[in-house]
Amino acid sequence: MARPNKRKWHELDLLCRTGAGVAAIAPLACRLLRELIGADAAALFWMDKNGLPEGFFHEDSPASAQDLFLNEFERLFLGPKELNVATLATLEGPGIGNLLAPPTAYYRSNTFNLLVRASGHHHALDLRINHEGRPRAIALLFRARQRPFNDADLATLKLATGPLGRAFIGGDFEEQWEPTQLRGHVIVGASGDNLLLMSEAAQQILQRMNAVGQHIQVGGAITMPPRFIRDLCKAIEAGGNAPGLMEIPNGRLVITPERLRTPMGEQPAILVSMHIETPRSVRLIEQLLAFDLSPKQRSIMLAAALGQDRAQVAARTGTSAEALKKHLGVIYQATGTASWDSMAQFLAR
View 1 (spheres, rainbow, N blue to C red):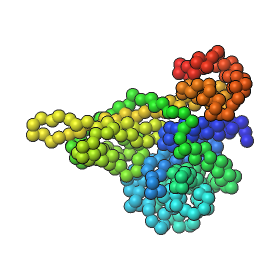
View 2 (cartoon, one colour; view 1 turned 90 degrees about the vertical axis):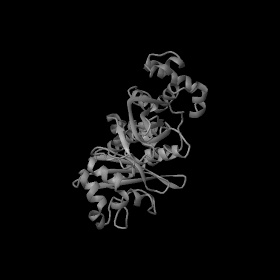
View 3 (cartoon, rainbow, N blue to C red; view 1 turned 180 degrees about the vertical axis):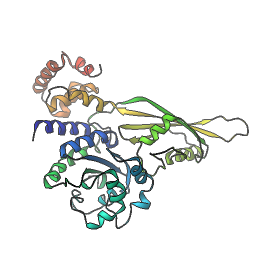
View 4 (cartoon, one colour; view 1 turned 120 degrees about the vertical axis):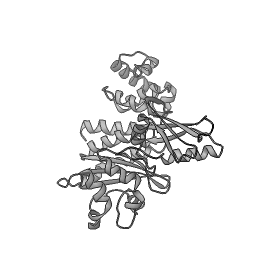
């Protein structure tokens, strides 16, 4: 395997060990899978407890195709003639390569014509990730008509089963989430059914969620509250007032509802504030890859930056005190640091 590919496999492994979750790492994971396989584009779907898509990230699908998938999935893409992520989640067998040579009917399906072909693709290669006895994610790679996938591509994609599966086990570190500057606000009637006001930032945030069944239009103005806001309002009516978290591509969405005082005679209203947080570990990994270090040395440096001490790292990685000392010598030289604490602070600069 060429050295650049070793580095990419190591990056994928590090990402999947962070504990940030599959949605947060989806854009980077897609880029790595596309480069490793030599595809034109990649997509990653995470599934709900019923084996249906809960959300996704697709590198190059147009807004029109995304809107159909997000808001019309059950009407257009479920049924015996369709072969897509919902079907792939339940098929018997190894869970890989079912689209390598699909049946002829596939090319007449809504899935192919409204999603795959509409995104400028023809061939697809699939990988299902199972965890705790159920499907948790589907990875898809795409190519144009002139470049079909082959058995070598299938063998390469199969290598991603282990790393992607680890994304559902829990991280090697306690994730640290960093708030972004993008913050939005939505005001709805107390029932959650009526959209009264929405900031421009809120619309941007909602259209980045890629959450199935939320009634969010990606390609146009949002005219009704998403389902999760309606659910929050119903919970408030029932006496609850809990903030919510939703996994989204590149991070997570923090949602805080608040009752608003309204003038006498005006309908009660709810303010829903939202902002995006991104995983610090993913940002650190991108910085780590600039250094000429071994995979274990990068793992040690990442653990230090995320707050683990020498004893914790040695125990987790199975590294003896003498071997850890040698690894640290290489890291100190590469980074210009001279101690565990200064190394831990190095990436925060």
